[in-house]
Amino acid sequence: MKTKDWTIVTVAASLIPIIGIIFFVILYNDSIADNSRTIQTQQKLSLIVSSVQSKNKIALLEPTFTEAAYNNAFYVFYKKYDSLSKGEEVLTDLRNLTSSLDRSTNTTLNKNIQQKMTIVLDQIKKVIPSANVYNIKDQDVDNGKLILNDTSNNFDVLIVLHEEYVTQKMYDDFKRFVSNGGVILFLDANFFFAEVNYDKEKKAVTLIRGHHWEFDGKSAKKDVAERWYNETKEWTGGNFWDKKPYDVNINFTNNIFNYVHHEEEYVNNLNDVIILDYGAYATSDNIQKKIATYKLDYGKGKVIVFGLYGEDILKNKKFLGFFDNMLSEYVENNSTRG
View 1 (tube, rainbow, N blue to C red):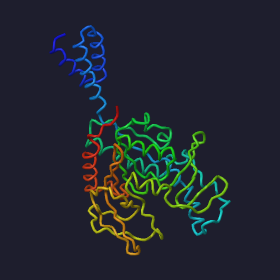
View 2: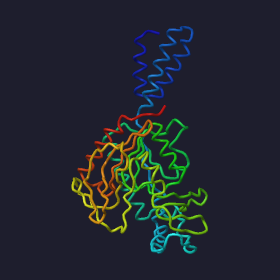
View 3: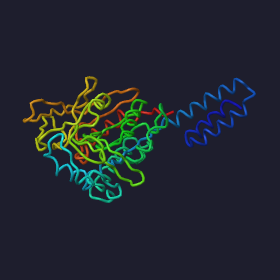
View 4: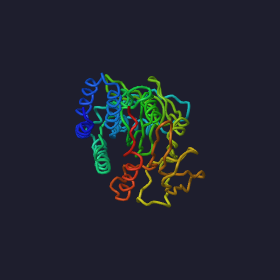
């Protein structure tokens, strides 16, 4: 075969990647007798495979477990027993610490999240039109969909919203995903705050530990606030600003997005790289915390934490422009699969 024929095949491969690869496999088999030609074919095949794999594969995660917890379940219990002293056991109303995912479908909360995910999806398609975007759910992550194996991811980038309730399996895989080279964008604050168990047959989540409670299936008692506090700050760079009383206001001296205090993540790792500091302060809190959008490298990957409850400002044009910049800077050219 003449050299110019390679150009034709390369063009075909760029237009139709799978067919291009097949062409090269056929060419490879036809040129085995010629060692130099075989080496050349192998090299070109490798380049095409690499090109195919480099196309961004982005997962947009729906927080179905958190939706279930908020759906007239966990928070009914929290409110009723909020004044309980630490060490006291609760033996009643424990049914409220389990919630069905089916009950959370088509609720007001669910529809609101779907709307927010649509906005995020539109921004991704605008900034990275060639990206392959997949909508996945918490139960998919619990079922191992993020990771192909110990060192390889199924996606290049993961974008999460209000990921407050997760299983231990999910938490470990989120961490491994970043360590393998993946990028996670945390649009909302208050992620990984509590551990739940997921019953696949019943399609229900049950609180285990976190959000100031621990539940062993028989009784509940007051416990830690943030389930993985120390571990989370090591690889995500921050923690949830868990204020009490909850109605304490937080002010922002650099409030370019006209954000109103809701839930925020504060910087808690010396290796964090600050992208935008919001100048936060709470007048009733003696210890001031830095709330910022920041980046942290972990393993072969990185996390981008917006620090605010980003869903609240998804209609703010300045924030959408900022979000687009984050996509362009940290998502568009990130491909680590293969």
